[in-house]
Length: 153
Image 1 (tube, rainbow, N blue to C red):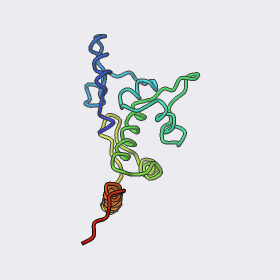
Image 2: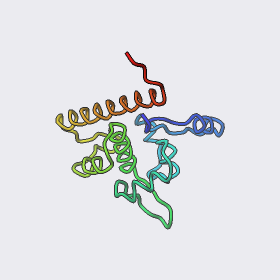
Image 3: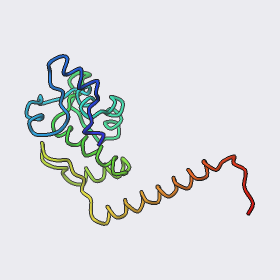
Image 4: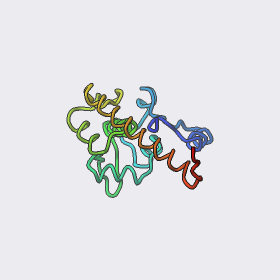
């Protein structure tokens, strides 16, 4: 999962400096975390770009505190980002994710992020992704056969 990955470079940098690099897993990592995270800290932890975090903010999905020009993210923002990335991983659009995370609380701070998905939404998303998969398979076949001479039977 993208939000649980940590780059080898970040892991190595943390090992060289003698500091632990948080991976987004476990209460122990969170309890040692500062009360707020900078945009760089959050981006590194979740393996996303600064631009992606600013994009989510512009779309109203994240609401960091501001101290001058510095964006400061709370544990709630961290949990919300994990939920947003989980929704993306499941193939939902940002509009759908926003509706899900804004519709009700996304979990307790420090708890596992979750999307409010009904069984019907899960089935609908599975059907949607299966249709996309079939379309991709057809496009791949067409591309693989592109330019090849047609054989007659």
